[in-house]
Image (cartoon, rainbow, N blue to C red):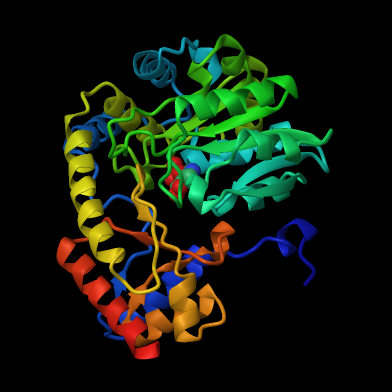
Length: 393
Ligand code: PLP
């Protein structure tokens, strides 16, 4: 049967492919260490679960407005004012089925066929596919390792054409963990304003930061930048709520209204119970988040120190998120692997360590390791990787 062209060109998720293989090995009795996870290993805090339960028993189980319940949109607006000093009305917020669907809907309402979106590389796997699904064209710009993989003002300026509609800024970044400084954001923002380009600011890892430098939203830097930016965020990573599927977009009313219309015909509304859970998350202090971040930070330091001792592996220390993104080119060459996919597959088959090859992130010399598993397992994973490299070198 012939399927629609739009799905024929979709690239299957590399993350899911290796995860499926790792699961199959695990199910057949192998001791697999999975470094592929894209979610916290904490349970959702009890105060959130309790509110969701209460909502269910109170009959808050019906449809809601497509943009989400008003108290949640107000809470999100309050959060942005408190955290970033940006003043939005509740009518500038649309709550979505995870941040992923906020991004999906945004590209659907922004792009006409052939419109270009600048995607700094390495990128989160879904950006290019979502852009293509909206008949847009992802235009990749490779960030240099020496510049912490970040997009520069000059690179941005050189990539803009008359078809450029938007640029994605993901800080802290998945997969690199790098964060843009205020100066860098201002420089990029200036170019975007000059060329009237929408800034898609994906801030989903905003709360998971391990340096003293606070997260800065580009929208907070000027009134013009606020107008030019659509903020994407959600509770998935910050509150260990990946399965609840609550994200949101915040920006100009025209864009938010169009997204709401689109959602009204696709999802109707994000799950009602989850919206009440997210409301509880935002109405609570952040004590448990801080404890989670502290635990991630400890594991990051532990894993990073072990990782950089591996032969042929270099890695920039991430500032946020929960991934390490080492460059393994030298190790690959030493071991005679032709590419990082082959390297990752052999590592999984021979040592039962599941990592995500960088190809899916547009970075063919890197692998992505998530460090949100038990410390003993991290140590064991490094030991196995070291044995693997030594055996092949
Ligand atoms: N943006 C980035 C950079 C992500 O890493 C993810 C999830 O992995 C998302 C967006 C989507 O988050 P959600 O689970 O809320 O859809």
